[in-house]
Picture 1: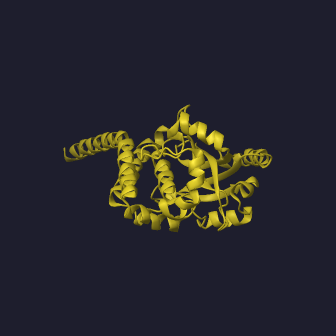
Picture 2: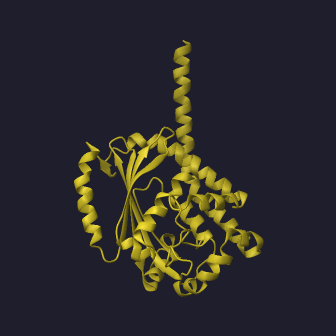
Picture 3: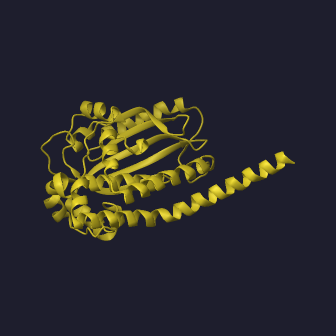
Length: 289
């Protein structure tokens, strides 16, 4: 889970422990499935469809400086760049972090405080617990995607205990080296109006609060804004949902929706395992002979 807990690791892990077993199992299955696929495809990212970083990575410094200057001039989108290093167990570890000045305005938190909290993985959860679980699961299921764009309902201030509701577009892209290893991820945060959020919800619901429609939550932007404080503090906390019939039904529907999304990837992982086992048996037979 650590890879998908860059914001607030302790809170997220504590939240994961109180999830119903059905969701714990499906998340665990997703993590192990994508681990198999990731290991198998790492050497196959060398194609025109992938963002590949070739040559000496030190040469990217000039381009990053230019990129920083561009995003510092942005008036509507905050930008973060995370550079990664791969450790022995194939888990990427964040090595460098860049955050544009606009992040402080968008997130309602001073830039220095945001960087300090992000570095220590101590950024408060800025969605309801249910939305955060859905966000984290969606990140896992999109692990093989180079570019992702989703819309979410969040706190309009991430650093204060006094906050309201805001709507945001979260976009991200990944950059790989010539071996297919993740070396950089870029994250874009843009506040959106209720009207834009509502249009996305009506036209492409899968891009707006993932799994909400599968759980029967088809509230409009106005309704989501109205209910946010109640949802954040009570109605969409996992402990409260486990106590109510409506909450339990939502969690069951979430588990079913994730399982349905995961089936395709499980089949791919199973074929990879069978192929690897077959190769192992061939090698073993040759050695025996």
